[in-house]
Structure formats: structure tokens, C-alpha cells
Image 1: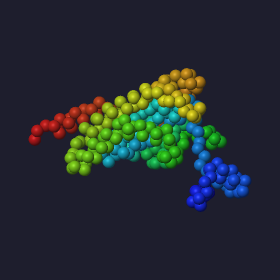
Image 2: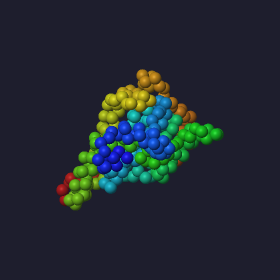
Image 3: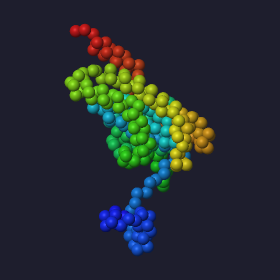
Length: 274
């Protein structure tokens, strides 16, 4: 309505138009208000209450498939791994079980996408943290990737700090017909860079937010010492037999020292004279 007034040569303020419409057409105003976008406020009870996991496919055309997980409260990266695939549900389940074994427990909730690659994580999480009989306390949440904002925001940080350089480099090599480097050579760069990027993120300071439910500070500190922000960790501790039973159903990527050995061997072959 404000734009129509301007088209007809009427110089009015938006606030005046709003007040007049509220008096002349209250029902129409109420209907438009009911259909407006209502933004939700993120809330997490503490470290390990909810983990957000997702895959990053920007480097997938070049053989580097990245999968990561971030704690919803502290925003600390739980894992950040690269491999030849990020579509194998057993491999993603292996990432999850490695983190659970390293940290000594699993989160209360896990938030993932609707893709099939998260099938094992979904099953294991529901096995380790059973759903209540009335179904009110689900231990695994899934939905659209765009709504998984914690990890989606982190992918933007990864692209600025690390991935953009490799995307441009590999893209130029591909366009010029020079992309003949062995996968292991590329993977070694990416593995080192992922670790460095995760360390930088976990040690940087997150500024205060307008959302009072979201703490500010360093992810490492907020994760390790939640008492400083008035919260406590919500780890779900596991029994040894339960963990071993779940661990039997997943697969694990090659250890880093094996990848490094393959990298050195492939590099030496590539650099040796014919």
C-alpha cells in the first residue's frame, strides 16, 4: 500500500500507512500477520546435549569428501574428517563411534539430514539413548539440511578458511587439463588443513548474541568448563558391552599414518623421472 501511495504522488510515511490500514482493515492485517515468518530461537541445555552432523560436498568432484559434527551449545567441532566418500552410512557411523569412544559418552540428541548416509548414526544413537515409551524424548532428529543451522554456518567458515583455496586450485587444474595428481597427494593437504582449521575455530572467541540462550566465549572453554556459563554437560554414559555391540556394525576409515604412508609413496612415484 505504501508503494501504491508513492506511485499516485502521495508523500506519506510507512508508519502512517500501517496505522491507517490497522484501523480500516483489521481483519486483513491479522491474516497477514498470521502468515509472516516467525523466527525461532536456538536453545541447548549444555555441552553434549545435541550434536549437529553433516557432509560438505564442495570438494567431492575432486575426490575429497568431508564430514563433520559440531556441538550445539559450545560450537566445538566434535570431528572433521575427509575420505574418498561421505555417502557410506557405515563410515559415517564409524566417525560417530570414534567420537563417542574418545569422549567417553554420547549426546542426548543428534541432529542430521534426511539422507541415507546417516542411517547407521540414527540407528546407533537410538540404540544407545533409547526413546522414552511415550515417544516424547526422541534421541535423533532429522530434517532439511538448510535447517541444520549450526553445522551449515560452520561450513561457511570452513570455506573461507580452507576450502575456497582448494576449490579454485583444483578447478583451474581441471579446466586446464592438468588435474592428474593422485588422490592421496590431495588428501594429505586436506587432512592437515582440516585439523588446523578445526583448531583455529575451537580456540577463537565467539561474540555475544542477541539470543540470551546462546553463550559466548571460546568453544574449547565452553565445552570443557560449562560451569562458567551456568550449565553442565549432559553426556549419556555408556556401558562397555553396549558400546562394543554398537561398534561391530560400523566401519572406520584408514588411520592417518597409513594415509600418510600412501601419500609419500604416491608422491615419490609421481615425482620420479620416467
